[in-house]
Image (cartoon, rainbow, N blue to C red):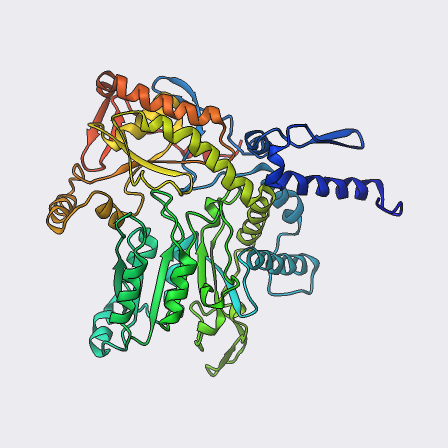
Length: 535
């Protein structure tokens, strides 16, 4: 019993919290009898199943019932491009505008109430981020740019291994082999965690797949023995493929890197909205020296910055990456100045992304409220509903479909139908939002399609001449726990109908080899300028 000294609203909030804890416990989904609780005039209940549980969150997504005019009439948007971007969440937008918005101001002073509030809110946002990834006392958080691409590049500059291209070759020639860093990547990396490392002064080595198509852990061991004399050894691994949803054993990879005197960074861009992140598991050898993720991919996250959390002991710089306002304690007319000792302050030059930090913290709290176990269990339900039905379609080919322990990301092709035509038809005929191409994972595509160097050269030479017609690719469909069973089954139905009707439907489209895309024959590009006008 709560003491009577608590107000009615405090008692209600307490029982709401208790009920939320019960709801988030996955072992209660087997309970057959409905559990209800009456608080004041309202009755709360534990939903019968996970689909119903997530409908509460679904109802708050902005644009959930949005329609658009397609060449074939009005269609309701069915969003299935979650790995590319999350969606706006109404309670977060309301909190930003109504709770934080009235105090919006710059930080860097605490002498007035608005700046005092914003400084405290900004610091608390960072604390929430640290707690979410189980950061330790030596870990620092930096927000930068718009996603993982920005923070990976920032980390490379902080480590001193990224220089201007004008100096890169000259510096590489001056370095001995032992002085030159070596960076190990998996075969499944997004371009952000691949091409950026190619532009450092280090040597990039791709760890190939094993016979099952997953990361070859034994090969990493062998490569580390081969490069044992390198002073700086970095493993920068994706936590999960953004193409197939295949997970990597990143804590195991971290242990191997540390046993060989290396560092381990993990890219959580694809998996962070759905899985737990633990920088410091029980085994200290499995710690993660840096993690990065893109909050814009979370429900409620669009408009946020990239997040980097890293061991501050890696930071040996006297000068920040972005010198400027907010990074110095003093300057004088004679060229003297002093930077802040605190890394987070020193690397936060200029006006910080205050709203971006707030939004990140809110979408992390939303993820916790939904519950990671609930999220993963719901995705398993959705995959169990989806995959057996798709596998019965002879023309449908799922990439690395033999691997079942994956997040809710499926990439596929259909015999004799261009992937971008499939994307266009899913949009125009059914309102389903998916993405075609290589998902910014071109190297992984070589492994998936078994492309040798000669075949790759033939393709890239045509691309260099403006002809993308031979560029390989796939269609990516990504699940989210707020999607209903009806959404999933509609996708299966749409694939079947496209295959049946392709000969008739494709007549309405023309192909452009320069963009590798299909356009409706009467397509007119819409003028977006009216959307920006105030009434």
